[in-house]
Amino acid sequence: QVQLVESGGGLVQPGGSLRLSCTASGNIFSIVAMGWYRQAPGKQRELVAAISTDGNTNYADSVKGRLTISRDNAKNTLYLQMSSLKPEDTAVYYCNSKSWSGSVYVNSWGQGTQVTVSS
Picture 1 (cartoon, helix red, strand yellow):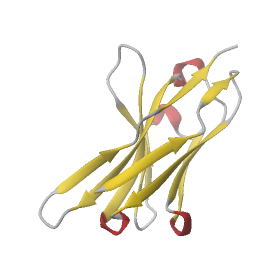
Picture 2 (cartoon, helix red, strand yellow):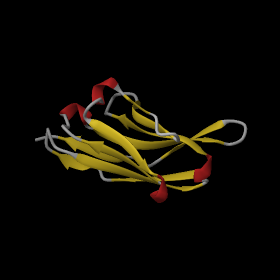
Picture 3 (cartoon, one colour):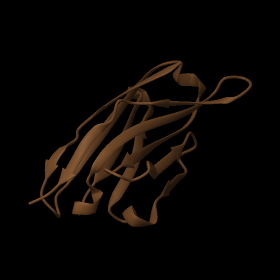
Picture 4 (cartoon, helix red, strand yellow):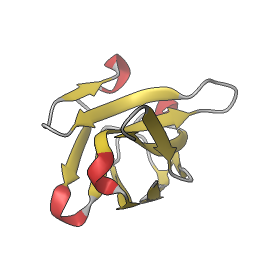
C-alpha cells in the first residue's frame, strides 16, 4: 500500500502561482508512475500531469506551459508548480500513484487539496 498526503493549495489571484506537494509513504518502491488530477464542481476528475519513474512527463493541453510536474526521489515527494493561474484552474487537486503489485496495477489517491483562483 502507498499513502499520499498533499499540501500547498489555497486562494490565489489570476496570474499568480502556487506549488502543490505530495509526500508518499508505505510501499514506495512499487510505484511506477505518479500524477496530479483535478476535479472542478460538476465536472469529472481529469488528468493534469503525470511523470514516470524514468522522468518522462505528459500534460493536459489546457495546462501546458503553465504547470510543471517534478519529483524529488530523496524526499519521496511529488510537486506541481503552477503559474499564470486562471479561474478555470479552480478545482480540488489530487495526487495519484500507480503501483505494480506483482499481478495488477494499483491506484492510490491523496485526500485532495483545494486550489481557488479568484480576484
